Image (tube, rainbow over all chains, first blue to last red; front, side):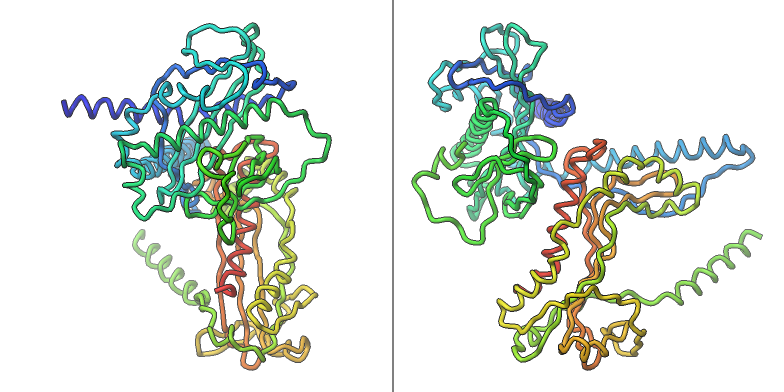
Amino acid sequence: MLMRGCMMRQALCLAAGMLASMAAAAADAGIVEGAPVPLAESGFALRLPANDAVAYRGLVNYDKAGGRAGAFLYPVGTAGLAGLLVGIATHGAIVEAGKNSEKTRLQAEADNVLVPFRPVLDGMTHRSLMGQSPQRLGVPAKVRVIDANESADGWIVESLPAFSMTQDRGALVLENAVLVYAASDPTNPRYRNVVKVVSNLHDDADLEAHWRSDEGKRLKEESARLFDHSIRLLMQALEARPSEQTPVEKTFRYTEGKEQRMERAQLVRENCGRAVIKTLRGWLMSVPLRQSAPPPPSQECTGDAAYPA
Amino acid sequence: MKSLFAAVAMTVSVLLTGCASAPQTPVSLKSDVLSAKTTKVGVAMTALPKVDTQFPGADCLLCLAAASLTNQSLTAHVQTLKHEDLAQLKADLVKVMRDKGMDATVIDEPLDVSKLPSFSSKEPNFARQDFTSLKAKYGVDRLVVIQITALGARRNYASYIPTEDPKAVFMGSGYMVNLANNALDWYQPIDLRKSADQKWDEPPKFPGLTNAYYQVLEMGKDAVTKPFTQ
């Protein structure tokens, strides 16, 4: 039984790792921003990913990664130039393997932050995360969730969410790779991007208990809230007409858990102490702005409205 | 023969190491300096360095040529990045100091530290250049110097092979010199390195590394002003 549990956990971790890297892969495929699509009016089908496990990782910092600078003596021997080239190639392969191994190790260490929540996370599926999203979104037109291989009419939204938890456990971060296309023309995407959402700070004294309590209710609810927010941002981005104003870039300061972070971006809108920005990669990002003092409590900015689109 | 060569190499190495002066260690900002309301403090900056790439460890000529060639598009992009409002850092620091009640003033002209005479002391925590002549020149009792020495991207090499992904860098130091005796009332070395989130190799605009550059600019500004806000 125990062995079966371990194997299942390994499989989920592997799936989570694969999914987490897919946001970057989706961005690699190129951002597409076609003509506006009024999704809220026309309705759409939200397609579940083929893999049902939701990706959760520990947020990793690579600032200290990498080797030192220094000279390296190549053992050329009597082989001359060929020996030197073989030496350089071998050195390169060893260094590259070391770099990859270090990144894997750092990610594995970062993932330890999730250990107390594994029983909850192992039970999280895309269906449980996204299944109630149409009701929560509250848009006038029909929105329904379809399986990965189910056919539908109208607009299709493919979504691949990947979550991370900060090392201080004060925030969740969602990277949602999204793809929108007409069901009749699936090879011609109307919109492809990554929507990233950094949650507001959770500053409970015991954050492990905070996220674990009531069978992980807060973890599930906050994940769903971030996911819904990302879909709302997607709908707004699709409805927006391209601006004729010259974009102004600036460096935004925001909080990610208890840490301060920065992002170079253009402002899309600001509300409830949060900003929606467009990053240098073209990603949409929603962040809690860093403020010297907490804003006065507002009815408009609590509960689900804490993430206004 | 091999042991003789090793012994000679070790002796030369020890002698060369002995010649190098020890780096200045950090000096915490003294609280009496912050509370001294009658002391006039000038804040100066050295000229900002060009935003560029560095490849430490690619030491031989061929290694450096290979590193420059490999990172050609990165260098071309990094050189287009701006200092943004970094030149305003001394004015920002003066505002922070005035908010603390200090009598602070901006020294408009860039400071060329290399033109000052050298200064030596057997006691620790003295500036290595003689700043005392600036007391009369600027009419201040203490001088805060913001000295930024490197901005841009840096990638460590071991001869021909990069040992890390490029990182945005902000290097330099901030220090306060008592112009009466050249003592350091504050010394903060700054060595900030920020990696790109996700991947870095995204020519021609390198958005991940560009973002890291602007992040490190903000972090560098914070490193200079933070000691005066506490």
